[in-house]
Image 1 (cartoon, rainbow, N blue to C red):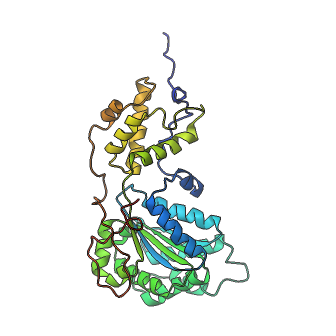
Image 2: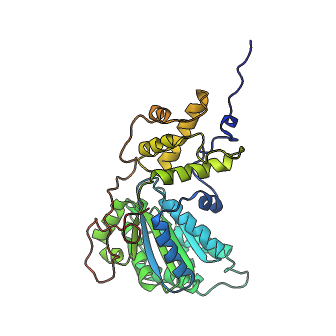
Length: 344
């Protein structure tokens, strides 16, 4: 009995499916696949001021699930590494217990990697961080903890404190204590320090009501917008390029322009969902021995075109001026995106 020849991705000039792995393990890969939007231009200005020790800043990155919040932090971490700046990245998950203790451990790890901890000595601020590593529960002195962290960041400037998915603290006993620590940090940091965190809009609304003093100290709030078709095409092209073995093909081949637009609409402009659907579409095309992925195939693998994706529903942002200390607590509609217009 004759066997049909195996259809491979060589049909599309590829070595394999470029959309199979949605997460990148290396900081270099994150920077490679990142698609810059207007928000990134504003962040670039802020980060340059930090690296030059001209200013200090507290920044919130807000968006729905898969919008690119974590990616912005990881791009920032990669840039900090390239500039030999001190950087502490802390990923807060639903399983995180003892957030402050975990953060202190990340400070130690970063100090070791950057060469600040030596066999016969450590920076003066490290003793305060060591104290936080030994915490047993959430009943700690928030002022003392905040000052210890602020000192570590200020004396290591230029420095970056990157807190991912802060909303995961909302159901923990530590949510209020950690917010108070952050308020102390934002009060005490010096020029050359950037504190940046990501969260859902619902958490920022909660923070505004329950910890208005901290909310007022956030200098900039960026709500990530959804991808345009051009931005979607660029992300697909970046992913495809890594697996491309045939030159002189259209950057998004086997997806034609109509297919890219259909993909982006089906994904609701959400980057993560876009890659998930691209994975399904290219697998479908391969299974059906098609030489292109067209809009009809997209409608087959993704028949619905939702306005949002699983996670947190985000309404279109309304431009607003940065919030400064001393102003009344804003309402949850104060989110800003980019410098003066909705941006990503």
